[in-house]
Image (cartoon, rainbow, N blue to C red):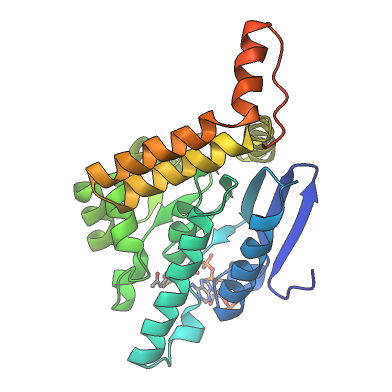
Length: 260
Ligand code: CAA
């Protein structure tokens, strides 16, 4: 697809995106933001893709944050514009109809932890590490990173992570619920593929509507989120896939979901 900073390949229903700036530990510069946005827009239209994996190139780093070299000389206006751009990307990711799995082998720091949090599921190796070190640079995770962490983890844990700026081990991130599955470095690729294959076997309609309900819960108040949940549930219930899932159960055979 001719991108400069990211790679994309698909293997049947599973798409894999690699952020490919290993010399800068895959730091997110404006080209990465723009290219990822464009790619996610295309993926959203591609019904053959049922699940997407996001990873970082090389052994050492998933993503070591936003590109500090690029940010160093920015004005306030440029920094604010860049934050809007980042938030637009993370919203795009959350609203992708397909589930997104972050496969994390190394540093997931600052914007790197944030882009992992914008995925639906995080699978990490025990060599990974997490954290928001921005406070050490005289800023904070102001690309929606404070709000998102607060909503996902709860206020107390989020506050400590933002204010202390400490590095969290993969084990600690797993205890906190940031990481949903923790494996040894040698098992990461297989564990990621296994999760992707499991999700690829589920109904794309149910997954899309489930994500809509989960997003509503993250973004709206209780009553409004429940209204969307019922509406999304109705849409999933109305699908041929739901009929297939229930028929398959009753006929004691595996379901074949078609995404309708
Ligand atoms: N931006 C730009 N370049 C980065 C980078 C970043 N976030 N992180 C690492 N790099 C570059 C380094 O400058 C270095 O480049 P050179 O070889 O040209 O000097 C290269 O990647 C390798 O990095 P190190 O030599 O530093 O590798 P290390 O193993 O000694 O340390 C590290 C690894 C602990 C991750 C360290 O690189 C580091 O602390 N990186 C910065 C982490 C950080 O502060 N992230 C938050 C960024 S701000 C943010 O994300 C903004 C926001 O949310 C709003």
